[in-house]
Image (cartoon, rainbow, N blue to C red; front, side, top):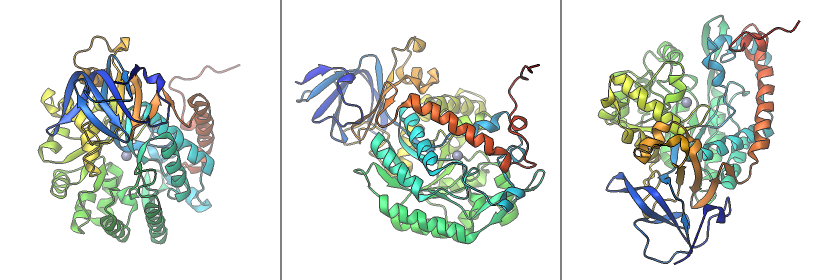
Length: 497
Ligand SMILES: [Zn+2]
């Protein structure tokens, strides 16, 4: 019947040969269109896929692993997955953005914007971010990063490095370098204007398409392409037309940030005389492979368009809650029939934290607990994201599904008492109890360790790299203030004599 062992017996980064039975106190399986909780049950992995979920497996297995007091759960699907050393953190207590390096001043545009990281640093930050996602139980990621510190868009070279990193580390990804035909420029204090370069946008799309055609299905299907035009206000109609046509031809998901902020709303209104979703709908550019973060500025008309055209909202509660903003509301969107997936978007890239904040904000938006159920937010982080990608074999654990699994340690003393394993996890508000992760049947993370990266050394490199970036902030900030004036400490520092 196979030897009983612990998880330590498996090799990190490897797919175990033969069948592996995972025995656990709780397993979140899937049947009849919903997640279902099993107690004292087994899940059997064979190759890349789940073979069985249920009571003790009667067939032969190569090994049986007793996991104890854990929740075996489908790994999370992150539609807006933080993939750089987060700079959004620098906006939380500092603003306005134009005065703090979040909008390029005309003087920086005139001198010629430059890459603030080296190619090696760009590759490293993706690798580090991928490890962080795995450590938080995220098994599928659509990376997102800031373009503010870039010369223009993302490069194919860094995405080729990202594809290699995801393959080595064992993270399922949809990859596409972000491109744009324009950018916002600060021309006077508080005055922001879009400036466009159509040719550059079209070149970005050409490069993204060549990359997409090259990497599709790389690594046994672990790496898939997507198209990632950056924010809607930096895209032109010809660029979006070609993007959506190419995506339809190839069946690719497209991620486009829209209805996400007040500056965008004002800019799109000035350029096109309407909201971004209405502008796209008018030109027949909304479709059911479109993933649109974040909908916090969506009007009722925008939401109806999302419902009519099958657009998925990528919901990222943490990054907005920090600024006192929220999706209004999760309940309303679901009642309208809009699909909702989730994203991390900022540091910490913690889906559990995002779920609990999403749950609280969703209830606050409706003024009561009827605003949202724990099952709905958990579904969004698993099934919602998988369905947005058209993948019924992701986001759930049933025979035939890919073995993308997160194992959460519920024996953690901080998690006592357990009420119900899913509630305990969500209300516990941290993904740090992620004990292990399987992706595509491979053990990608165990006890915080990920194959292909030394997290201790990486932590130091992240800090060095971040400080290097901070030192360049004055170059791209209006009036070029000193870093100490841009980002003063929370409390005044003690001055040395
Ligand atoms: Zn976002």
